[in-house]
Amino acid sequence: MDIYLLEAVINGILLGGVLALLALGLNLIFGVIDVVWISYADVVMCGMYAVYFLYAQYHVPLPLACLIAIIGSACLGILVHRLIIAPVLDAPPLNQLLATGGLLFFLQSFATLLFGTDFRNIGVRLPVLELATMYVSFARLIAFVVALVGAVVLYFFLKRTYIGTAIRAIAQDREIVGLMGVDQRRVYLVVSAIGGALAGLAACLLALQYDVHPFIGNTFGPVIFMICVLGGLGNMLGGFFAAFIISQIIAIGGYYSSTELSYVFAFTFFIVLMFVRPRGLFTP
Amino acid sequence: MLSLASISAGYGSFQALFSVSLDIARGEAVGVIGPNGAGKTTLMRVISGMLPLREGSMTFEGKAIGGLPAHHIIERGIAHVPENRRLFPKLSVEENLRVGAFIPEARARFAEQLDYVYSLFPRLKDRRAQAAGTMSGGEQQMCAIGRALMSKPKVLLMDEPSAGLAPLVVQQVFELVGRIRAEGLTVLIVEQNVQQVLDVVDRAYLLEVGAIKLSGTAAAMKDNSFIRESYLGL
Image (tube, rainbow over all chains, first blue to last red; front, side, top):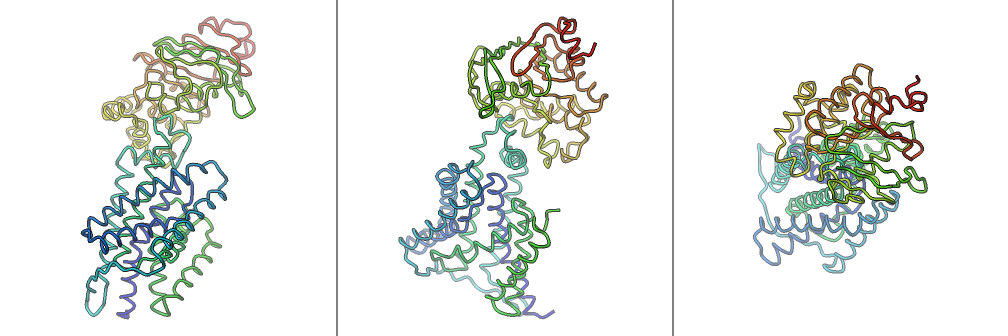
């Protein structure tokens, strides 16, 4: 196997980690609350700004800055649910989509107004690892490992705790969980906070690799949606694996042509698959 | 213990219950019988807080519970085994039971209550790791009853526990009602299976088109000429 191709494959796997983390957050929110957060990637953008300002401007140590960004994103998740989602919970899906879509433009415009359109970098230069003449970005490796740890923690939370079990139960029968003492509104807030925190964690990992600007959400938001739909919307495991499929297409496509064209390949693959398996790769 | 005073309820512009009054004493087993669409399920849903009360009042152990949401009713000690079981099909049997123990008091005695439910239904213990949706109807009904018992309720509401089950399993479900009663649990059971429910309850109410038409002891109901003719086919 060509060594450069192998390098592309490894980078693809590493890229898949963060995408998988975001797909988990979006799928969790959709599966439980039944609302698609079109503006999910813009919560990530807010988290990235938080890391940037705390670390690069106010010189807060990076781990602490990340922790604050994660907590802040969780609070933003709760706020979004309270102010935007809760009032339209019983509205037709199109209205919900418009509400969260409106939030997307609001967040992007607000960020432009506050911070301008400059590309800002937190200025952390992590070394590039050389493994047998292959180059692997250390930032990507950290992002991959942390994203995977985040996914495992989420898995055990959903599997082992009472609230986690209730979260999975509510996704299967919304009406009946009240009979077991589960307050649906409280679970929605918990899920929104978790979704926000996952976006915050992804923001920390992405801030190590990319510049932050008000429209950064547009560069990976559509990819995350594509991943979620490909894995079957609401299917967390499906989304997790779909993230790695898509990131491979992007990485290998980028190797054979260019990065821009690799997204064309990924979306073409997605469109064709939607004809073959309209309910997602992993939905029978 | 549980008392409903002229309650009315419905869905949108459709009124399903008209001034229904009903009383259950501690330790009693009470049946509600009646044809399809009489409002039996609506009655259960109102008691457990799934459906809002429109008129009238409900008290439980002397305290008003009318208008409380479902997640507060269960904390007072009223558990509801819903119509068609409504298990979480993709969760395992034990996870279904864990959701049943969601309220704080129940979490504290989870292990103890789980042993109790497994002693009532040894079959559930064998299937603890199986997805609930893949079990037979009878096993699912046991799991649904077990899930409700996990909160250690004072009153158990059972909505059509025999629906869709094989005759032998129906027999087991009614035997179980006798067993859980013996432990002091108060039971309100809604059934279309009139003959069998009258064998296990102390008293019964006949609900027709959203109103109580008759009530009395199980023996008196069995002897009532209207019930004999319309419901027992005698």
